[in-house]
Structures are given as structure tokens and as C-alpha cells.
Image 1: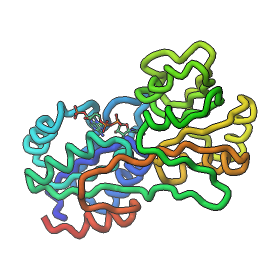
Image 2: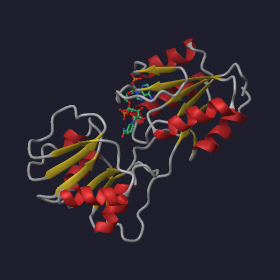
Image 3: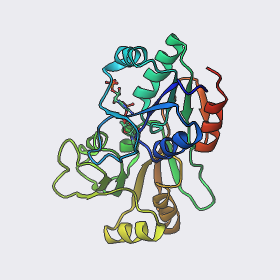
Image 4: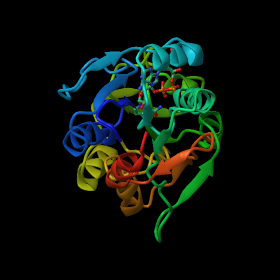
Length: 249
Ligand code: NAP
């Protein structure tokens, strides 16, 4: 890479923060801009130029890449953020801008896990047995897909409040995922949870609930990832930075 390069880092994950920190140290002089969707109000200060909010679709992203003379794009968005990843892949192909996507490996069931794998949020809602007491580790936009199930109890955990209020008999925990299975077990026990609904996000930071479900012998309705367009990928931050450094723009 050349010091005149301009890297656009699409963020919104823990890994994106690590990439921002390590990139500035690994490629001194290269220009880096981090982009957040602006969903979470409490944004981290990464000490690099940051922009917040959507680009205005694929066309807006293309305009941004051209006007800001972006030479490389790093997509470190969440594996379920399919729209922005799709736009990035399409626009980078069209403009011939190199793109690397950080793709954390998905979780696999291990001995003791009781998973029902489904392909969508809607399928997860249908997979829940009558009168189940469900821990829903979903986002603010996704949770309302379960509101029609008047027979279930939901304990929802998310970072920002839901777009539509929860059903009156449900409970809401506004926080990041707990980092220990013991904490998750205590939460599940306190609310008499019988089922867990989770996206297959992968990584370690959201895994405690999966381990807790295993230890409590609770079924997990595991939502498979959306398919993303083909692109160069890296499974971890170090590999991604090495690949980026190897580009001779
Ligand atoms: P999405 O469905 O793929 O994107 C919806 C729209 O949000 C995009 O079309 C884009 O708007 C804007 N957007 C998304 N990420 C952006 C970014 N980094 N910078 C600028 N604009 C962005 O994404 P989502 O699922 O709503 O997720 C939004 C953000 O939350 C992402 O950055 C993602 O990494 C993070 N996140 C998502 C999840 C999840 O489960 N989906 C979990 C944790 C964190 P325009 O079309 O106007 O450009």
C-alpha cells in the first residue's frame, strides 16, 4: 500500500474497532475513514476520521468512494448486515476498488448442543413451541417479528431500545451480551427460559449464551447467516491487515 491510499472501513463490530487501531499502526501515513450506520448512539472514539449514517444506497456509496478517492474498502460489518455488504461488493466490483470482508467463522454445534437450524427470523418464530419462554438475542428491528406470538414469553436483550415497544408481559434487558456463561445461566434461570433464539453471529463475544444453553440443556433456535456476495475475505483481523498491506495500489 502507498501512504496516499485512502481506506474506507465499514464498521459496527468489535473487530472493526481492532482493525481501526491496528491499521493506523501497521500502515502509518495511510488515510483511514471509519463509517458507522449510526444505529448505536454510544459510538466509540477510534481516534480516526469517522462518518456516521447511511450513504444513500449503492449509488451513494459509489459517489462517496469517488469523491473521497477511496482506494480500498474493508467491510467489517456484522455477518447479518447483508445490505451494506451487498452494496459494498457491488460498488467495489463496478469501480474496481479492492474490497476485503472480515468474515468471522460461524459457530458449529458441539456435543451437548441441541440446535434447530433455521434460515430466517420468520422461520425462528415459527419453530418456537407453544407457550415457550424464550430468550431473544436479536436486534431492535428484528424483535417485532415475534410480537404476533401471544402464547410465548419473551426476554429480549439488545443494545438500543426496540422500534416498537415489547408486548406488556415481556421483559427487556438493554445491554451488550454477557461475557460469561455463568451470567447467562443466572439470567435464564431468573426468567425461567425454555428456549434461546440466536443469530449465528460467530466469534467469542456473543457466545456465552450458547454455552449457557448447552449447560442448561436448552434448545437453541439458530438462525443461519444470510448469503453474501463473493468477495475476498479474512477470518481474523491480523490476516486482514496482512492482506491489505500486500496490496500495491
Ligand atoms: P444492513 O441491513 O446491512 O444495512 C442497512 C443500511 O444501513 C445500509 O443499506 C446502509 O445505508 C446503512 N449502513 C449499514 N452499515 C453501515 C456502515 N458501517 N456505514 C454506513 N452505513 C451503513 O445493516 P444492519 O443489519 O441494519 O446493521 C447496521 C449496523 O449495525 C452495521 O454497521 C452492522 O455492522 C451493525 N450490527 C448489525 C448487527 C445485525 O445483527 N444486523 C449486529 C451488530 C452490529 P445506505 O443504504 O443508506 O448506505
